[in-house]
Image (cartoon, rainbow, N blue to C red; front, side, top):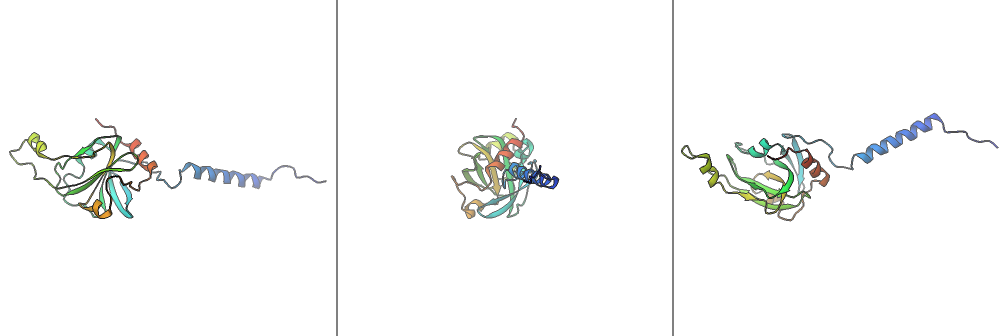
Length: 185
């Protein structure tokens, strides 16, 4: 009676490689985006089947400036505001030269409110900053929101996205974005 003693080196190497590949695949979390988000980067987001390249606003300065000062916005462009936590949010059109759509989004990806924000007259030469800020209307999230997406005016309506809808950004990606953002001051 003959017996096989042990496993050959090539069998061990093959099994080790298969295990390593399996562990690598398991650690990627499926199809979620594993890139570390950075303020100012462009995040490709698909909403209602349409792709948008959104500038990430993850730092206080970027979130404060927003799209202010820009005189145009590409039809597939916009801004993705990321905050460290969910709370009631209020945006305004400070120094904004173009109308903008905004959707506020909770940590799970549900839309809490949508607004089309019209342009406001610029600050007048004799108008103080306090007077200018005092006359700007605010657009609120309605409920606590951790994210906001700004697009060209009328875009959310044309996409059929409204309050209560879930955006198609994976929850794992939303969580990674929230964890990588700069704290608020």
